[in-house]
Length: 456
Image 1: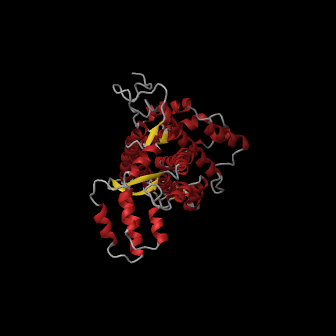
Image 2 (image 1 turned 90 degrees about the horizontal axis):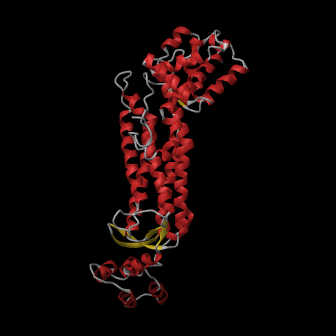
């Protein structure tokens, strides 16, 4: 069967391809090969700058330009050629080395020192640097910008509806009022904290040979300070150097990075469920889209599918990222290959998050507050004012304020404005204070919610 959008096994490469292809340059097979080619070339360039490696002359400007062109213009056809070589080598990184030798065979400078491609490297030296660069670039160019878009959308909702009062629900029961905007502001604040961690995150790499001890390096060039020089190489790529490893970089930083993403995903699951609930209460309406169908049999329905899709795909992302966070930290003795096949699924874990965030953005753009329903709900629950009344009674030394309000309101079928105001009028309070309590309504009892929403 030919692979197209309908025959793809993964929905990320089929049904949702257009929404997740932004990650393909980083985490596809092509992307991995491209990063490997880049690392191999950059490593050779680094070796040429070490004075004690006299065998490699300083490359001419023309050759330096050719190196850049090979990296920048690396194509799908180039990747296919490497995959053809792999059919013979049965080794993906060795295939890259052979392709590079073939690619530069007509360049005299490079061809004369072609055996310095992959010098003193184990495959993991190339792979771990490639994955670190892939993750760093995707984080900077895809993950953070998309999450910033989500946060900006939520902030816009927070500011737009900062003053729209809404009844809270704690334990599913009516509770002190908030505002619609304040509830979105809470999410903005949570996400910004995690986004700052992503912005500051340090991706790690190593390039220290077969088992992390520079064995081959030292035999070939014992006079070179390899740990220092290789640290300089890794840091020149914008990565953090890990000096202590087995054959593989132990992936601790990947687990740490995924844990931040899992936390962000979980915050967004919380948001998706809450918004879903508010839509079901009719607190939110959804803008209609011409031609869209909500149900195959019930024509009236406008389902909250964007938030449902987001919740489902965020859960899938978390499942994959959680497994990778645990599995990647474990390697038998100095190396086993279980991490290799797992690492190839990074794009899948991130892909479900990217897909979910697109659903969230679409869902948020369709929300409209149904203020009439929200205010009607508030005005049915005057018992919400039991909290401020008993709190003021405490201030003025009235005996058993909590108990008196409990007796007045708890378990009663209906508490209306008259019930509350009649009670206030019985209290021995200064007239000014009593009038302030009488002016309270479930709609205006919102504390600092409005200003908090506007400040986020």
